Image: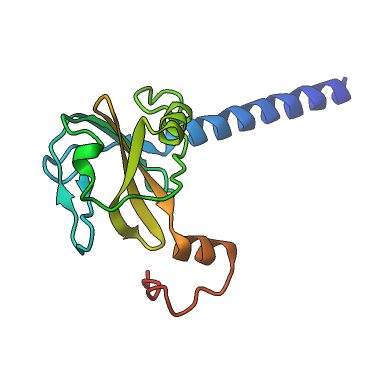
Length: 173
């Protein structure tokens, strides 16, 4: 009888721990980002140091303090990728997935659009966090998506490789 009770307790504990971890990964750390008109969607012009805002509507975004690359956003714009040709393009962008409940952002569909030329990605903000850039993609039909991605310095810093002189000094906490 004691063995059965112990097995039931262990099984219930494992189920509760698994459910708790799932909830924390998919829902727990995320929060809605309050829109700040004129600052939510910005692009870096070729040769510029400061990003320029673009016209947008229907902005939705989520973020989490647990990681600098959990930011995801969706918006709509009247601008086409061809009209944004003066902004800095991003070579080989890889959109990161979002939680399933954030239904306006589909990384798989976006990746296919980027690969087929139906969308183009542009640099939004360099080093928005240390080693992390904000990437903005716009489709031919006016849908826009934003995510954070590790840049070269971020990849080196987080995989343990020597960062080198080309990267800015890491900020002190």
